[in-house]
Each structure stands twice: as structure tokens, then as C-alpha cells.
Length: 512
Image 1: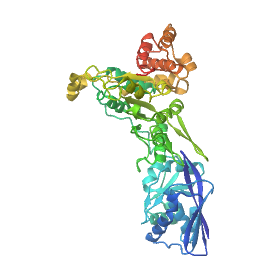
Image 2: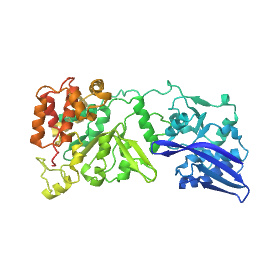
Image 3: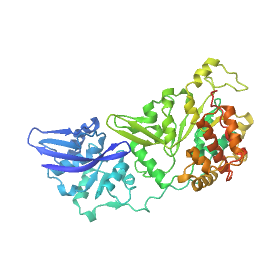
């Protein structure tokens, strides 16, 4: 007897429909899987057998052939356990085959018949809803994720036995939920005040510009000057997520398998800080069927690359195109996947291998050749793409002491930027810029049409670009930063003061 059940396979951020076909035929008992399954799907034979037996169902005593159609599409992951088990029950007469009509399902089976969560449910739910599915069957831990798709009926169960009992009931008696727009709202704005930062007033201005305009930031300074603290402070300044942004972030995290089961919609902007010895596949993504890497997992948030000069140059140079376009393309022989990566990049590094070059109190132990080799790991095109380049100094003992006293710390941190200032600046950008984009995404013609340059500013900018021998890309980024500084001051036009401040953040275009 032949039975079918509908499921889906993940390809990048999208899901492709897969029909699970089960046929029982005379012959020696056995279960054969065809349709380009990976090792995890091949092992589902033992999981399905044990789950059926421990759930009180009969195991197949005939030859069983399971086909995952289309046959030329590679499939991976344990999410096909549940559709294989349901189709097998229907083929053996233990479940009425019409009950599976119009249903989509995905889930991993335990040996005891329990349903375990799997990754990519949000993408599967979107595909099921667009394909007109009557309902989607998922493990209970994935229910909140599947319910993010409007209008999709979701049947959630904790075990195979419980699911079969639900399917045998009348549709109106099943314990399922229908999504409504009021069930999940966009994440609320955080009520906690940002942590105070002592000293580093120029760095605080740079953080405000980074958060407001979506600019990339490079911090160079000796050990212990606060580079990591400043980077981890940045997510507190970013505006709260909109519902669309939260859905995009949740989808990427679900595909990567890092979305916490039961959490549903992402509630805060991501902050990713990969180690400097990570591979290009870990940073950018990869695999036979590509999965997102740290770059895409930081979509909508902050990617912090500490010890930037310790990263392999071949890895860093692969960031250039994604930083420019906000999309990462991964190509394989049979497919090409696009992963979003609209991030705020924050990079930190020491000025030399020992870390003390330029410090008045600690002599540098590095030779000029060692410093040159150290900085040669950062290519000119990559530094060009970092809008803000900041040199930090060590905090004084009095500033460190002030941070130990809460009262003194709050008094000293009056210049710390607030999320309200960032939100106001972004609202001005949204009202002025084409398509409501941030200043960091403005093109050259758009800067001329919407930048609002005061008289004489372009002449000052032209002289500065000529004297400092800035590239065309660096020169335009100076204007974008100046536009953001003007927005933070609630000014309609870029003044000479804004341009001078923006030029202060271009310190490393020609190296150390």
C-alpha cells in the first residue's frame, strides 16, 4: 500500500516542498530510503522503528521503501522522522490516509516516541502557509515559532502517540490554535537604562554616530583601554526591533539552529563576537547545503571582531562585498543561496603585536618591521569600508577610581548617548532619505540631493580629500558620517563643524 505525507527541506533561508512517499511491498523486512537523504535521514530508520514500537504501534514486517521527492534535491536533518512515521502508519492501515491530506509536518522522533524540536520551522511554516496547507504539525517546543506565520493552523504534540490521537479526532475537537495578530506583538522597548561609561568622550560620540547612522567602527588602542566594553555597550543604544526585523532575525536564527525552542519571536538585536581563529565558513557560513555563519547571525545587530589584526587576511577580505551590499551570496555546484547581513560592524585591535605602540608610559617592544607585518593583515579596501576609525588611550587612575563609585560614575557619565537621541536621529533620516534608509547607505548622488550641505562645505571637503589623499570611498564615508553628526545635533544641513568632526574619525586610511 502507498501513502504520502507532505514536508519540506531547507535550502539556505528558504524551504522547498518534499513529498514523503512510503510503499509496503512483499519481501524481506527492511526499510530503504531513497531520494538523496543525508546520514541523519538514513539513521531515521532506527529512530522510526523504535518510536513506533515504544508508542504501541506495529512495526513493518514487510519490505518498506521510503522516497523523498523530488529525487534530485539533497535533503538533510532529522526533521523527516515525523512525516516518515505518519506515512508508514497510513500505509500499514494503522492511520486513515485521508487524515493526512493537506497536512504538512516536520519533527524529530526520540526512541520513546517523543517529538523533539528541529531547526528551520519558521521557513517551513511560511512555505506551508503559501502552499495552502490545512495545518502544520510540529513538536510542542516549535509551536510558538510556527505560530508567527499569520493564518496558519498549527497542531502541536509532545509525542507520536498523542499526535495520532489528535488526528483521529474530529477537526473541531483537535487542540490546535489559529494565529491572530494580537497573540505576538513586536518586542517591547527595554526599560533598563544603558550602563554608564567613564571617560572616552570621543568614543562615546563615535558610538552614538555608529548607532544612529549604521556606520562601521574601528577602535585601535592599548590593552585595557575599554574597546570590548564600548563594543558591548553599543546594542543598548540601538532602537528596539520592529516586527519585520524580529521576523527576519528569528528566521535566520531558526535556520542556524540557535533560536531557543519556545521563545518564538526574537526580542533583542543580536550581538555576535566570534574568536579570531574562526574559519571563513564559521564567519561567513558554508556547508554542502549552506547554513548562515556569524555574519548572518548578526543581521540586524552588531558583529564584534575583537583582535581584528589576528584574523587571517583571507578571511577578513571576504567581508568586503557583504559589508557593501548587506547580502552574502554562497554558491555551490547545484544551488546559490543569499543570506542577509545588514550589520553594524565593530572591530577592535591593538596598535602593534605587543599592544603599547604610542603609549607614553609603556615602551613598545616591536620593531618597525613587526608593526608593518601586523598592520599588513588589514587590507586598504577593508579599512576603507570602516566609516569611523578611532584611536583610544588608556584611562587614568582617577577615571578608573570614579568607575568604582556608583554616585561618581553616574555624575561622570553625563555625556553618555541615550537611545532616545539615536531614535530621534533615525526618525529624521527616515523622513529625509530615499526609502527611509540610514545615512550609511546613501549613495553619492543621494548625498548631493538629500545631504543638505552648507555653502563652502563641499570646498572644504574637497581640500581635505586632496590633502589626506583619501580614496573616493573614504571621502564619501566622511560626508555620510558628517550627515549623521548633523542629525544627532538636529541640524538640517551639514556644517563645517560636522565635517571637521567626521575627519577626526579617519585616522588609519594609510596604515599605522
